[in-house]
Length: 95
Image (cartoon, rainbow, N blue to C red; front, side):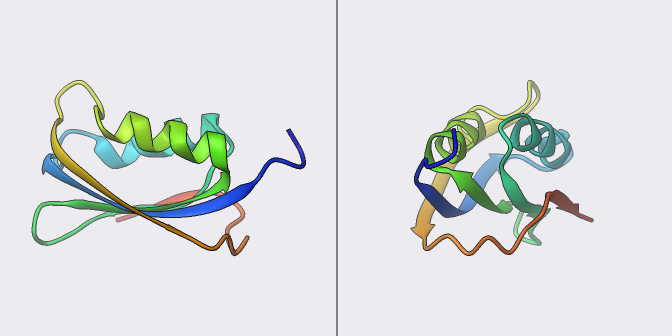
């Protein structure tokens, strides 16, 4: 897969996305797709994440965010694509 276009996505997920293992499952999905970055809860009830990696892999993680884990009820996913930086070495959950 080397040579694939790299991208960065800044994502906000709203709905019932806290208290349903959204962050932990996001880490599993991102790691499986070799996507780096981070995910965290926001005080307003949304989840925020930054994904970096091959464009196709990042898009697959974003697609998963539209559904989330079984107990989540995703209402909206806002995505802003940015320039790839390569600053991350793994995917982290911010507690």
